[in-house]
Length: 187
Length: 194
Image 1: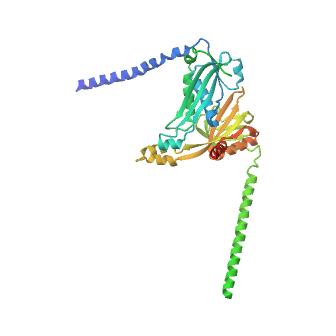
Image 2 (image 1 turned 60 degrees about the vertical axis):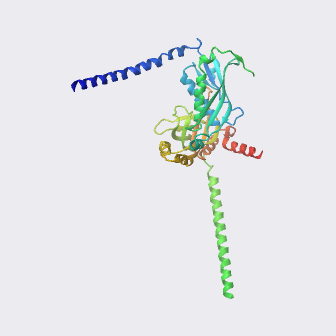
Image 3 (image 1 turned 180 degrees about the vertical axis):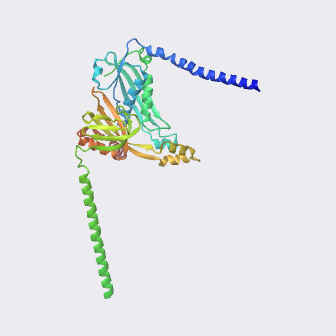
């Protein structure tokens, strides 16, 4: 009886030890790839100016335009990939070296409905598709991507802008554009 | 015969009196309406204005999706959460005011849980009725460095217009005010006409 209790205690101690040790291992695993990401890309640190969203030929609501712009600034801040993140019109950006401009133009917008989504679950999705361009001061496009943000099931329509901003921030990784061929921007 | 005639006269008199009463009531109603209309916009510029609102995003040092009081005092647009210092923007810094409308689910988590628990797809029926229309007020403003900011507030239906009017009274140019709900409806009408 006593030996059985002892075995149980040993087993429990082993489980606790493994449980304590495993998060440390996980932390180590997740922390390892982060360090090269911070120093990846080029030696010089870039700054970025986020321009307001151009609705293009769509009838995108002003609230969506502003929400996308604000969410973009927030998401880019989270990535820590740029030295400074400037807003459109910021006077400090004129003196900033290595400045890139992020231009966002809406390509396609499907206005959804939260009620429709809740009732049918397969219709009423809000979709915003934008063309994101990273442009240098000289007007050279270093990155040109089409990104989409959607709300299909849960959440308000404005959540589409949050998803869109997150997706744009993902494609803005320096590794995606630092080695890419530069294209002259047609003006 | 005479009796009948007297009765008819009485009837006519009653109808006449009723008509006069109705006319008086109608005129009184019109006067009250006109008086209310004429007194509503007569708000002096110095009077503080406040309204309950939900801050969706964009205002400085304010959490997203939080309830509070949106007020206009002197020359500042202020949003204050309960027992927290308010964030403010100077009215001259405002470059654009846009009105819009959204429909949102009400009831929060309890309604969501109720929807999920309802048998035979009854949750969908609840969804049909658990929605409320809101106004959105989008304010575009510039900071001291010239950077463009945007803030979005959610207000009860019809209240965004009050805030807009108040801001216009305080000096925001009418040129920067745009009402997208009306723009949309006119666009829809023109499309239908085609």
